[in-house]
Length: 121
Image (cartoon, rainbow, N blue to C red; front, side, top):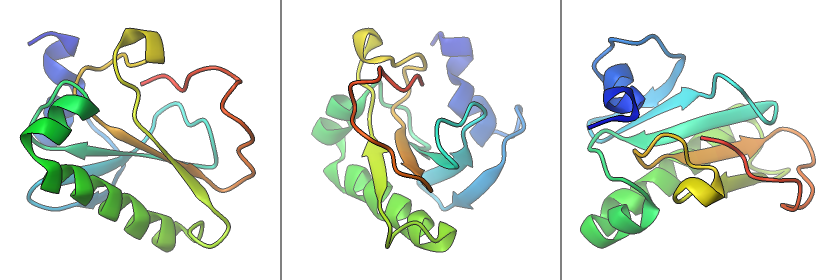
């Protein structure tokens, strides 16, 4: 399976500790251990898909659920009104380092443009 047998699967199994923000039967949301903004949460499907394109092809409803959960967290964190960014890294050149799709929720400050380089993860 690689990617340390998917770090996210190990977090879901509670083999690796994480700061869980939200969880349901299909999705877990955790705080990023290397935050790139004051709010940086990873929204992860519990079923492993390699990247966003694979998830979209296999289960578009789950993809929509990731976005919905991210928005709910943005509201709970108080950043929905001021704005937030949702980001998928897809494959190595985009900065994806764990090949289990996850949605980055970033906010809590002005984020500027995207030209500053990839957000790793």
